[in-house]
Length: 356
Ligand SMILES: [Zn+2]
Image 1 (cartoon, helix red, strand yellow):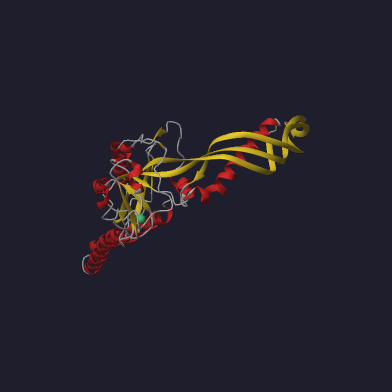
Image 2: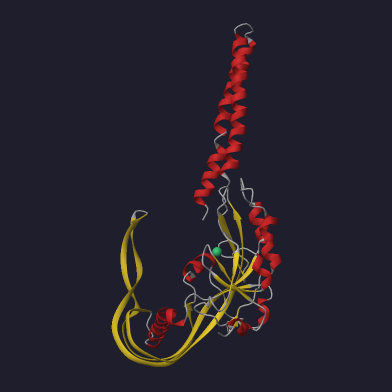
């Protein structure tokens, strides 16, 4: 069986995460790390011939990292620093030690398209009406402009070539895009083997056959938008087409992110992701309920001590009247402190239920 890893033209290995099933091509030095996607398990090296993935080819294009590792580390430090009642594991330096550069795949599809289409085109037009208003003891006439849409049915044919329509190469693409954001595809460079001397690459789990319906949808949207422009319309709806495709060409593009993770009180891992171009960090900043509870108990203990002292002063007040006033004052302070004891738990609870 051929060794497909040699296509990547550099010393790389195949590894998988048993927890989330993600498959990676990576430099052997990264085999010791944890899964950069879920952080929940160590990576396991796989034999590349007996475990051949659904898609094995190296990418044609790579978007380079624009955020440097140093910038990513600073984002992580700021994230950790701003955490209230941070879990013991959420420490900037520790998270930076786990920071890994990771490339994720995306398809760019080119195709010749020949199609018959029909749609309803919408044209904006203005309607002017007048409203009578009574103000300052007299009537005023106000002109009101309103935009309405006139819909017209249209049919046509289309024959042209499309380049770089985006289709997902990962099942998780929509979720990733929603969380991390989009990437600027300008500045993509041809694949050079040295991009994998440090970074890890995720292999596509949706090969072209599987992603083709999504690519067709992207092509249809591009075509619909062009038909709208050709008709000089402002809107389009009910676009239907009978397309024929030829000369489809698929390009795999890798886009860059950094990931790291921390564990909460219960040992569950939470991944932080940093956009490789903008340096924006996304991830949940959870509070440790354990730590918050400890804080609440400490304040509660102070409140209990104050109650006891005020009770002793109350007893003393039976003999010395001046002690009564002090007992009353201390009692009020004790009540305030007791109420304050709930604050750490409430804050931690709020953070954990409202973060993201
Ligand atoms: Zn994983």
